Length: 288
Image (cartoon, rainbow, N blue to C red; front, side):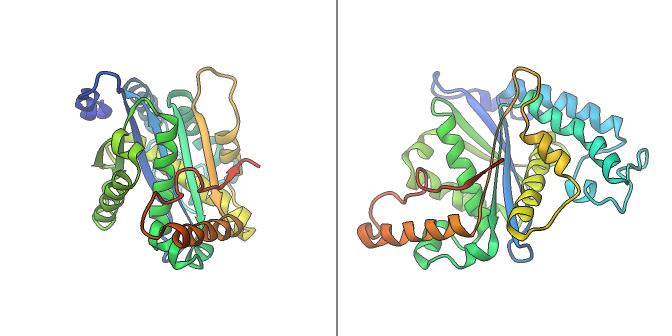
């Protein structure tokens, strides 16, 4: 089982801490997309293991070696050699079992989308704290929110192994640990992993892609073919237990307000004190 590669992380130095695994992935790059997103699929070891077992089953059923949403959402091509499913309804139906798999087995499904143009117009004071890259801001928001939800646990962050992004992800990880006492205490590790091997990354990719499409619809007025999948992701199923879903977007209004918050912070505290990131980074939640 692929998830067992990280089984050693279950051993912690403090007995009261249990490890929660957060597989993170992004959708869209800020230099060529109007909206970007970051998502995380979270669970404890037994949850990840049961999730990956069923995810692997559905990959085999659909004739896939891996599920990458960039290809799966492209209806001009068959889903796989074994399944065409090129109609809108057919492709939605083919991908629904993967959404259900995420909801049935994992603990939290989290995602944040950001309006890139509005982010670029934020104040220098805001960019000083958030960086000039909205992908990394979305990553930080996801991680900090998760720390608030798992206050008694250690959090292991597992990111997709991309050579260009890895150094900046590490620097942001270190910045979070330096800046926020909660992060310094709870963040147990940062790992890089291959999404071809770790199915949980494929799940995070699915969440990030659907969140970005929904955010584009709300920000840019652009309809998309996979609202059925997003609706399934955000609808409570008739099963128990199931994953908590926490999704949202930073649009123009939220980013304007946030920018002013950082201006006021800089004016009153300069480089001292804690940046108003954990409690005051308010986003518009889905669905609403």
